[in-house]
Amino acid sequence: MSFDLVLFGGTGDLAWRKLMPALFQAFRHGSLPPDGRIVGVARDDLSDDQYRELIQSRFNAVEGAKRPSAEEFEKFASMLYYLRMDLSKPADYTRLADLLKQRNADTVVMYVATAPALFTQVVEQIAAAGLNGPSTRVVLEKPLGHDLASNRAINAAVCKVLEEKQVFRIDHYLGKPSVQNLFAMRFGNALFEPIWRREHIANIQITIAEDLGVEKRGAFYDQTGALRDMVQNHALQLVCAIGMEPPINSHADAIRDEKLKVLRALKPWTPETLGLHAIRGQYTAGTAYGERVPGYRDEPGVDPESRTETFVALRTEIANWRWAGVPLYIRTGKRLASRDARIEVNFRPTPHAIYRAPSGAVNKLVINLQPKDGLELHMLAQAQDNRQRNGHSAAQLAPVQLDLDFDKRFGAERVGAYERLLLDVIDGRLNLFVRSDEQEEAWRWVEPLIDSWASDGGPRPYAAGTWGPSASSAMIARDGFSWGEEQ
Ligand code: BG6
Image (cartoon, rainbow, N blue to C red; front, side, top):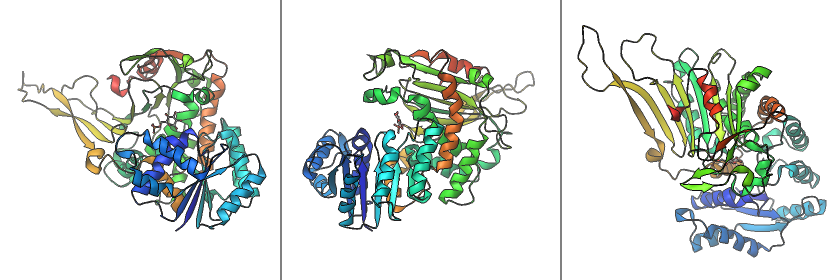
């Protein structure tokens, strides 16, 4: 099978950091169809060779095993081409069409990794140049819009010229091996299903913590914030994976139909819950990796009076028969105490206690997403012989855990998220991509937060290297629970 992959934003941050390394790994693993071209598109005036050199110089900065040898790079580079384009000029799309016509590849992937403001224009121009035929697949990076209206406008423009099955909306969390394992855990095993419901589960906590700050993306991030950058997409996709009903089969639409129902069932915000169950914060100077780091407002590209949130903690519920009444907590932020993405499913205590248990100890399932990838089942066991006292059993239980480490079991070098997703696009598999109605529903749910935050007192400060504002712990403590790592 032959393919052409056109990478709009070919000299951009995403291309360097994620896409080129992923394409190279796919090439190295022998999973990239050999008859392919990767065409970088940008405004810079570069020849094919200069583009190859530029990419090689980036690869040279990579440490360790992921760095290609000179020989490997030479082979990979023979797939690379460059086209200078001004994305607003129809004539430039005609030149692109001419380049693609040279081969009439079986599949043409248009990866739009540009500023979101250009998505509509690029897709419309692709169509105007006659490049939207059935062999074309368009990949759109997040964020797709900045609110419901802008998301709808992009989707409407896209759907006018492409069929839904040609559109691959990326959420790279769905490509992570750990997230695929979450689906496998739920739908490949019968073990959890009977207890995966309100009768047995006390609360669910989703944490996506990053220890890094905004790095070089200050200007972009300041317009975006944690709610749009992480919650509307990655965190809500995890909510879907945890909360959805088993799909009738593994086809893309069967999965997406069930995810959509979860998003529709999320409790709508009210003035009261907006006040009590939505906390946002912004990091101030603090310590990370043992060093002083600047506050968010002092990061390059950030407005010194910025009100953008770098931390969000929410409490919600999936209002349906399975989950009614089970609090679902979502927390994400930059410059937190550690890099840690995990889902904790806390089970209800025993209905009647005959043992003494350490306070706070509960049965819980921890789904580690990163940096660890695995499952932990926390239980209580009798650690030592406890003699009967006064005829009563006074056994003291101790917490123990079953620990499944998927990195150890399957190898830490499993196919990375972008590699997996790029290969899926080339093969036309839509399972791990987001449908337009899912995305709109997610925007609909976060929109009241965006609106209410536009005019309130602004985010609460938290020191870099901590777990966010104390209001986040207070929010969960009001329900009688605490965040996992703080127990
Ligand atoms: C991206 C966000 O989508 O995800 C970034 O734009 C964030 O701000 C990144 O750092 C996190 O991805 P990962 O795979 O490192 O958890």
